[in-house]
Length: 158
Image (tube, helix red, strand yellow):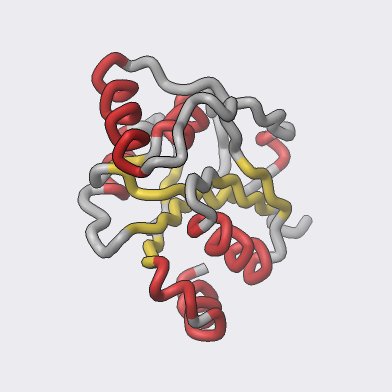
């Protein structure tokens, strides 16, 4: 049986959506966009950052409005999101908290403004120790502007 893969991502500003589409194309995966209710995050980046900090501090992560497929049918799930304050974006954290037992591998990918902080360490911290987490890949919006180069980078990583 072929390795079945899924790309799951959250994108606040469409930058991560661009990377997710490239990962999907390179890996020939199915794809799911993680969404939250429209009123959860405003269009202002700084206000969104403040809300995310409060969510992390209180443990009140945003509810996902996405219907997820049966994740047990996948061998590998590529999980993407923006870096928020050097950490996993809270909608991605919600997904990770709801993952439950998973026998495949998770592969993080992320977009940042040039400072990924401890994104991968934070990602691993949020995943059960029994789940395999493979090395991730981060790209900036600037790196994603050159689609050919970004695709080559993703091909070398995936």
